[in-house]
Image 1 (cartoon, helix red, strand yellow):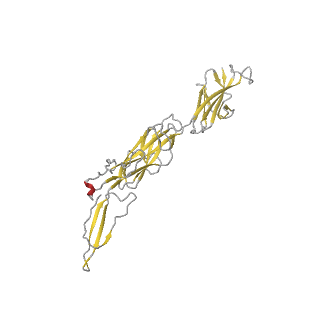
Image 2 (tube, one colour):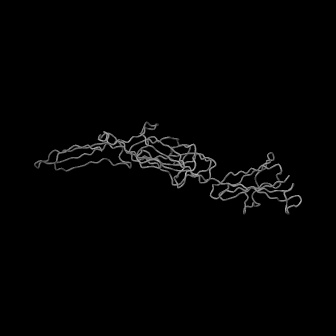
Image 3 (cartoon, one colour):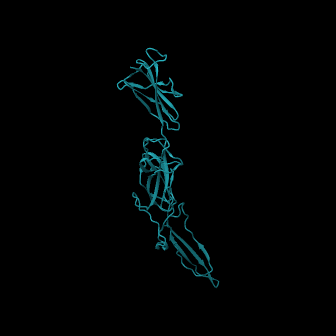
Length: 357
């Protein structure tokens, strides 16, 4: 402890004490000089004497304390193949001094995520951005960073961890990431300062009132310990994918000998194809669903019947519904068509007919 005083004689006295200025939320600023003065009035033989007194001055030490916190309380929902998926954090300087903060974003290898889930994959192309325009939303104007420069006491910055999601993932896959902010000296603007060191117990500066000691005061974070001049928090990405099942069925409509009564698959017979696309319950909506079906040389497309899209299925059987659409490319003998968005639990179909050669 810094303990400096001026000794006074033993006298009967009236004492007045003057305190320092009020502190900020993070405490009185590091390096502030606190002066405390006392005045002693006394008499000798009933005669008032010249007052005497003393003062004590010392500088406030530096308390280093940083907090990283996830913004929101839910996981970040992403799609397979999504680019620039965003998780959002705040970094708050609870210290009583302006500091720099080095930022790192680490992938997790298995284990518990941030939201009662389990890490199962890694995102790619991980980058850190600071919310340059203070909008709270990641946009093209935000700046990629590796540190926060000159963050004042009691101030916060919004930080985005931005990454790409691989293709081929199923619904429920989780990628957990951890953002860590490590306190650094307040260096020259535009460059990150040096790592901090806590004042050693018993050092000479503990009895020097003009020396500013450094004390680490942070609590343990998601992956770091208490009083290490750093703090960390987790967030995660959870995949919501479409789970499409495609089924192609056929039925004989008529043949040259039997007509529509118990027709057989003989040359000249008409066959109806139905392609059904089903999306499992609890999945993401599948959009821009494009169907492409090259026909074998053993059948000829029935242009007189046409193509019908967005039909339905009842008990696994295609219905004779839908709206006219799609196209046929005679050069590649390919039937194609687009289906409307297939929401979770829904099925849409594409139907057409061909003649057996």
